[in-house]
Length: 114
Image (cartoon, rainbow, N blue to C red; front, side):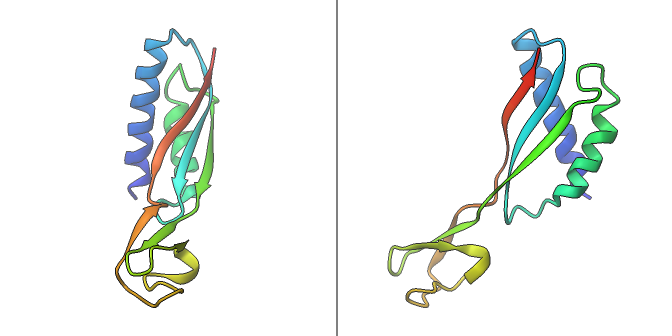
């Protein structure tokens, strides 16, 4: 389960940002999670609850996960398409000369605190 490692990294980052901005308490963290990131949102929030409650700064805070859609670009025809719906082969020209543009991210979008 790599979700716990991701949560520890998020907590470290939130603690650093909180110290830099003189936050005494964090109420929520908004995380952007790519649709094909391989991270299971439910596991992530379970790990968050366990780990965040062990710190004074994050005790009782909420982890909000926003899913970012996966989008693939086709080098054959130059068009973009939804990755999950169509897979690797371009639905427009059937080329497999494709690459993922978005959808693999795991990033903090917002920290709400006082």
